[in-house]
Length: 143
Image (cartoon, rainbow, N blue to C red; front, side, top):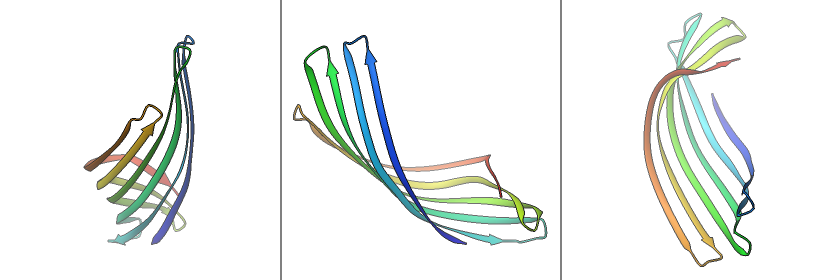
């Protein structure tokens, strides 16, 4: 099985502290990815699988920070991330059309790149690479 994933991201944040501090942020973005699942050891009631995912995500946020009365700082932040994940799992078939699906864990890599600039003249970038691995039976899907 092979598939595509698409998503739209929208966020809005407002924080206040006794009229001394205010933070307002709006963000928009999208994500996209591909995935593939290979089933092996297919039995009548149980099937093991390995699922591979690769994805990209981009979010751009505009923020306003107000400190006390007249100190306003505006900023723009952009974050991009790439990821690749492999996850083994198991299908338990209730009947020929319905199964319980559970991923047993995952191993993956992600790269995150961010940049920002603000009205005070501050400019910055950051990059992060990470590897992760976990074992869990908490991701069960009915279908």
